[in-house]
Image (cartoon, rainbow, N blue to C red):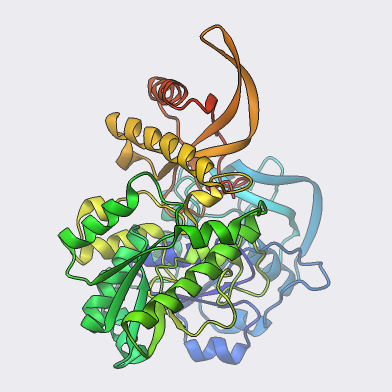
Length: 511
């Protein structure tokens, strides 16, 4: 087992995911954990994550230096490298030239960590501090134009450090670097896969729930659908699924979800139409955080009132929450050093006084891992590879106040975006695509007349896990078809723009 010490990085569990992709079981614990807890885990190797702090901050996270004397291989990433350098007597300094994003790295030593790696590769940097002086017994492995020590090693003690993030897809050959650490340096074995996860999670669900009944909030997305199939495998008819139409779904989506469940899954589904309640809950609200919290709160209140009509003593509420939701919400299970990016409705948006205990079988998984679970469980590909859709729905794709007419306009625009992408055969190549209704009007001319109408932004990204994403280089003819149809078919719109921002610095959703 490989242990990851989390110092608040947005990517800590992405590291764990990359390790699991290599067939090695991994766990994440708080970087401030005691040496006793670390020893209790009996790790075969340790990775120290990055984080938002500087090692010189008064409240900078620390760890027990004894972990570097455990005799197991250690890899420090970004902040983790700086911390282990400081712990071992090296020097870290704040440089005027920071490095954020893609950086060209030159390799000076190809042994072990960089075995089989090109002499120059692009890596993903995110740091202001850099190493000034190496600890005793360490050597330089690579450098960049602005950073003299991009990676270092004490090969005798098997302690390594990298200033970049090999776990993100933007780093070329990053997975090879991780594999080199796992198998060339740590000499670990491949003995973990999704079949192991399913067996372990089914056993965990049965142990937690016992004979109790579980209510699952089914949204129709791959996360909740796969959670439903897994839970049904674990507890059978103890599972009650409820689909709440909150009024912010895509065009005709509610009908499609009910039809899909009826056709493909032997699961009882309760369909609740609660549009009026949700529109009332968000009336007048424009702040994205408040929207998410109001919607999350209302979901639970509807669950509580509706389940009382059909079943008694339901103590558990299951959700298809993924780890990116928890990471961005800086919720329970994330390092106390993590920074909140946004509150996800099913994490930080839940009311404190709700009557349910939460069951989240996928809370440590990423979207593509859930898709692998779905395939392993024999689910249809059209469900498994459905584009992600947020729980708050179009409410967080309408910038500003939520009104029924604004929802209708966005539904029509979004439907055109999806239709043209599917027509071009791009649906499976794109991670997520959608339309956003902006709260601004612009001047246009249509039919020789002046118009003053709303603007639609089109967002399309490629990703593996939603932690990082690149904007899609969509063919111009597809963008032209989308723009032409939206403007010609929706009178309220006279301008279409394309979002060419990656994540980071932006998030995938606009709110």
